Image (cartoon, rainbow, N blue to C red; front, side):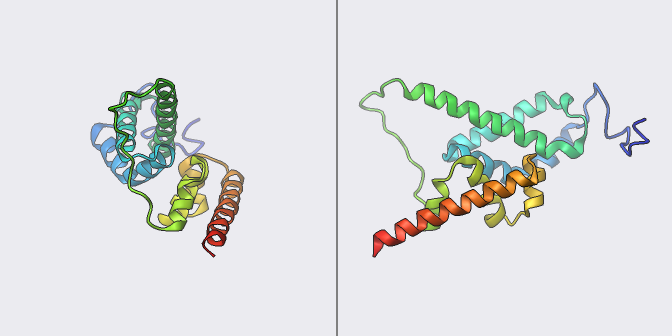
Length: 178
């Protein structure tokens, strides 16, 4: 039955690992930049982004037996990464409920130099990821849809909303400078 549907048995093995260490590493390296952009859209801190990506890779390696088709590696690992980032944000929020000691120094990342990038940084993570992937990385909407495992209509709607928000933000900032 699987062969009739065009799925090769070598790519789909229920209960067995589809990826060996070499294949896993090669696929992970191909999407390393994408993983960083996705994590940055959520966490906005380079150190946290690196932690999220590393933790995601460890979880994905441990759960590699759940991946049934190596062609679905990218959406599968991005979903793990998004969940990891959300978990880190929840943990950060819980920890922020406790008062900081006076001698604790908060470190902030570098400020975006360009007003457009400042406006992009203010977008919700779901919109920021799309803007960065489309305009900075040059991904098509179809590629983003496949990478993020979202419907094309969702991608288009979020892009439209992000552009509208960016337009309003930049217009307000421009009017304030006049």
